[in-house]
Length: 241
Image (cartoon, rainbow, N blue to C red; front, side, top):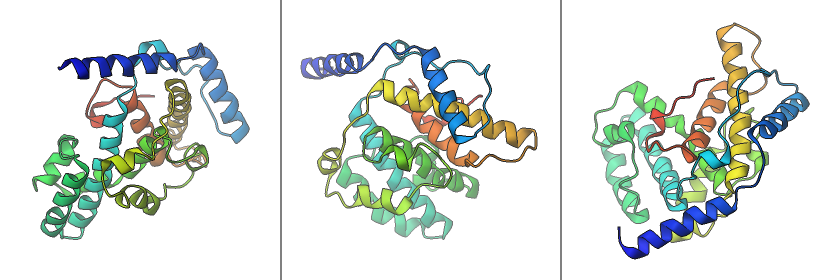
């Protein structure tokens, strides 16, 4: 690591620390539960706290931006592969990956798709990552709470496509960013952790499903967890409830 990169990393860490308020994990839990009550959504009082802000490190904004772009692009390749147009799609999207400089941001499952060693199930898994991408776009400040916080319906995938594909290059995409602070991201993560318990409890115990969409909840939680996880591959993150 060069001196410039080292100084940049220190400044990034300092900025993240400056954003950390004094909210306790217990306070965050209480606020989530109050919101669930307002929405009429069942919750588990004894569900533990999530990590405190002092215990996690937010990923670098460039890593988040480039993962968001690479995810959008590979999802479209997966859609094309489901329609038996993989080779044509890969030829086109090779240029798109290069245009944004995100060739190195695919995870294991996505690399297998790019190399042509995919299954129908893996393609379906990747297409669901639209919701994971939506979490990244929320954290980047590109979409608002009203489009994210209450996951009743699937996200607006055409909007996600426009947000990224209408940019001429990476710098133009990054110019859209107004990164949310660690406290705000943890607030949302805590809420989605509790949403996830509700949807899993309904699924496992054959209860009437709540108004929120369980698959949407799981994938958005995955994205939020990834933002503060040490894991590079979000498929390696545990989503236990």
